[in-house]
Image (cartoon, rainbow, N blue to C red; front, top):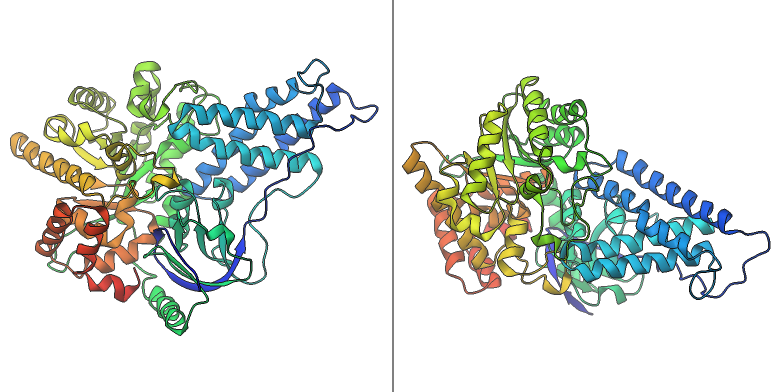
Length: 570
């Protein structure tokens, strides 16, 4: 019997056999005689054809995916046609290349390594994209060899997937009917793998060192809430898995109109990116949309989408939430979402660079045109459209954005609180903005100075960190002060991944959050736990979390007084 401990990112208790991700595509030999008749021109065309085929395959998968999965696949497809990767490979084909000419396979391999190394050197979000480049490199080499693309193993029976980490393109298309749970030795709680696992509702544990060494076929018990993996499960673990399966069916529905035990209303909203997502969120009972990510309409583009295209994309979401609130975030470009027409891929530290609202200074006009398209879509539908800007850091930025939005005909304009300065000056920011929405993923990484994509920093990137919770409280307190000063309500929602944690949802409510937005799959569990506490009890639990010295202590203090979490296996 072996135990492995990591960071639990999606609750669930299952027992099943392990299947390890297959080995990546093997490195082509460095020295291969170039066959007669093979020319630089023919190899160049092979590389470009393989790149196009990989891009087309990823785009096809994106078309049938939804939400985060669709956006990740579209971004990976863009990378398959990255000029740096393709041009770098072509340069290695000719006889003048240093070290002599290469085959197409070897040229792509070396070019991919060079691009990945360059991204690692940039640090932050761009370093995370290095893994995506290597994934694309493997896909192109497999295409050149006439082999299937690397990916999740095929299996007739359901299994627990184990890996060092997964490429986003693989995670995005996992089949929950076959994959019982996901365990990785790398990644962090806010990595692409973790976020997509939540969206799929897969029990998942990341940053569990050593799980990639578990032999294929080994039966394991996975507790996605506790972050524990156990080989050779005993009867107690099997009973826990069976109990979870029975309880999970009871958590399958959410009727909306969420309230605490004392009747205090806390609307539960959904995070979406497309009209397809919105349809699923509405079917899941979401009371509205707390985060509409608009950048996914831009990711597969080399140019800015036209006005009518944007109007149609936003309207496809608004149509599913007539007379309900839809909070739409303006373009969050930059860092891990670079756009060729808007962002600078050569920034030395993109996470701290020109991203979100800041792109309006570097490329004026894009934001104004987006606001015009949002306003047009809002006129054509009956949703209650609220608009917010990401990466706002100062009251001046809040005032400027609010003025732009109101001038465009959007009456409710707010800001994302992702930067500690915004939380600490929330009263001044909300003197201008109509509302705030806490982006806990970025707020956590900026507070703890820890890249949210890195597995070794997973413990720091925990939204239960008391420092992060104090900033949440500062935001809510600032909103209350601004409301008192202006005479207008200043609601504060949460749209980061933290809202999907039922225990943390109670704490966020106690700190003053007025709405919670999450992946639709999390709605039933969060609603069921919130229904067991009054506002006063939530405030008491929030105080316990604030007073804790560590994230682990905060979580334990709250869980000890919320027995419903263990009863539901959350």
